Amino acid sequence: MIARFLSGAAIAAVSAGAAAADYSLTILHTNDFHARFEPISKYDSGCSAKDNAEGKCFGGTARLVTALAEARSRTNNAILVDGGDQFQGTLFYTYYKGKMAAEFMNKLGYDAMTVGNHEFDDGPEVLAGFMDAVEFPVLMSNADVSGEPALADKLAKSTVIERGGEKIGLIGLTPQDTDELASPGPNVIFTDPSGAVQGEVDKLTAEGVNKIIVMSHSGYRVDQQVAANTTGVDVIVGGHTNTYLSNTSDRAKGPYPTMVGDTAIVSAYAYGKFLGELNVTFDDEGQIAEAKGEPLIMDGAVAEDGATKDRIAELAKPLDEIRNRVVAETAQAIEGAKGSCRAGECAMGNLVADAMLDRVKAQGVNIAIQNGGGLRASIDAGPVTMGEVLTVLPFQNTLSTFEAKGSTILAALENGVSQIEDGAGRFPQVAGITFTFDASAEPGARISDVMVAEKDGSAPLEADKIYGVVTNNYVRNGGDGYKVLGAEGMNAYDFGPDLADVTAEFLARSGAYTPYLDGRIAAK
Image 1 (cartoon, rainbow, N blue to C red):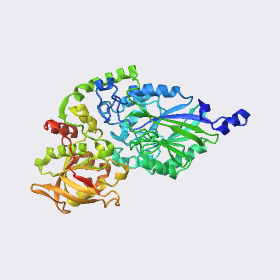
Image 2 (cartoon, rainbow, N blue to C red):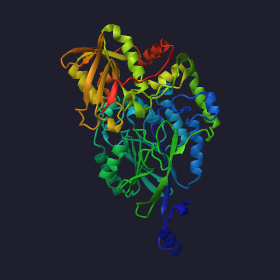
Image 3 (cartoon, one colour):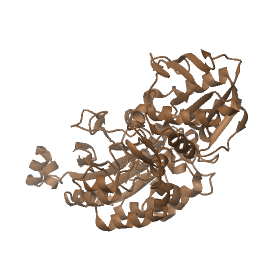
């Protein structure tokens, strides 16, 4: 197998006895799994047993067990790493927190993972408990955790493993704005990714390690910046932006791997729908001589491991009564894909924002804002179960009502579109208000034509007028960069009903709900 990766010059050198053979390594990788232990539909939401039996479903841990065994059989040297965000996304996480992820990551044989922002959703303590339960290192280089008792002396920046007689350096990386995206608490201080990575590369290089892999939960754009701004990084295994890289699909965001200088960047979409497989050949100096591969689709052709499937079914029993309860019906699929709800008006955003506003309009509230990143899946046409609603809205957020000046609302909308080019989750889905944005303008000056619905039509947003607003408690308290709402919002009440319950009840009153777009968000 190794000989397949050798250059012609290396083969000649080996046969002459003049040099050692090149070193080949298969890097198997996942990212943004989000507790999708069971198979998913083409919409990344739950998939019925009937559809799974008919080969219409993707992913699930039982398929990964099979795929990993097959992949490992194809190579002499392999590692398995994860690009972060194992936490959050289904009832499995809501019920078990990190315990179920730890059990199955141990079973799959991971060698390391980086911390994703969602690993902080329930604070440092839950992350620390997960780290105690796993049998591999969890890494994060770009943060100072020395002031956080739960993580100090536990969460390392990098590590070294051995495979096939060679040392491999592994470095973790997480979003610099994790303090805005999750709940790490005040004691974890996040820092610049490029500087953090270079510091660990220099340390590892000084220890004689010349093969270095970064597991980066920072997004495709940041990964390219880190590759360009550092030296000594051989491979970046990405995450965070759910980026699909491929050499065969016209839906890919770039080639697999994407080369930036001498650094190979890979990413395998999300939710266990693919298993990344990168075959890398290093020369004697630790430089990449060749890097090739492709994400492997985890479709119905991949058999599910029976023991794993049975164990997941056992763990699902406490959840079945909740998630199998049919709460509504939809006439068409409700689109809630990450790519659409973080880039413009989406049908799921309209549904959730409408449901929020409908619930509190009697209180004098006339504007609803929901962050697109809080919408985690689509819903198939037909009966809608509570489990599907909770897959869309898994964060247990509550409705938060407050008053704000028009100038505050405008600043919030500007924040919402400030990182649209990165696919950031702060993009605002709205109700009771319409606006236009220009993604080509400078952040802070992208919003125009803001109109607020009134009894007799609509009127322009007035800077000094006080409006009633509803959002979720995460956004109201400054999540996803909405700090202006926490600083300038007035008379806030953050303890309303659960957003998933509100959405389910709104759907239930609608008969067979028909999703729609109405132009409430326009792009220039």
